[in-house]
Length: 385
Image (tube, rainbow, N blue to C red):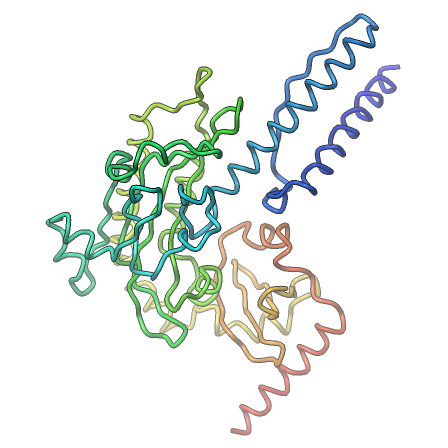
């Protein structure tokens, strides 16, 4: 009897989940929804078999579903990777929201809500930051600067402070320089900005998130850059900050997290970014030793391909390349012509996340066969050369 009861509740939940997916599909921001999202809904059931009450409860629950979905997807829409939220346009998708160059950072809003950007070094110069010399010194330390909401909104007119998305920028940390190679292998300087933001749909609770603003050298995507150089130097700080912001549990009807707590998190992010530079310096000697002993993923590319099972060969649907998975996080990227593009070590979980997002898929049997033949042919040509 209990199993039957559970099955009836399960069927009701399945119907509700199906309705949620249907609304996601037709929502203008539905493409931003991920399979891990959870929507909390209030559910109130009357014991009396009163059709009028049931109809009223269904109408209320449907409205809650709409409001909850609007809040969830609206929050995702303001957190667009590599972009800031434009208060004039009410979106992060407009031309005003994009970084002009890898060296730039967001410095605040203009009177009408347009984002302003400036070279990170010039921003420090304008603020007479005493660490400016260190920023430009060869192998100098990473410099991290915290900007408060008051600084970022000081020129914004009151009329542009309120917006339909309920967007609020609670402060940011900008760090630089990070020196990374462009596609030609030339080191370039770039700045990275971490923003703590929140949004709130009408009658909904405030949701908090971390925005990461950065541009790879030459306008290349950050994912492509990571494929070439391995884990980006600010990745561990971003993961830590994301995990902390995800724990924000606003109290009260306003759903506001205390400003003191946000300030503490921004300060911790800045310290981690600056500390990360010193840790990279300590790893330099170890990296050189690994280079001399051959403990680099590139040297294992062909060996990993030769012994890889079919389930370890993936296809990148955007870049049209093949990814061969090896041991200890090794991954090797091959072009369809059989040329080795790069080899990297990915953090745990990267493969699963990219497959869940549909970025990577299992390579088909005929694709694997063709890749192996082309790699063998490429090696034979190199051997004759």
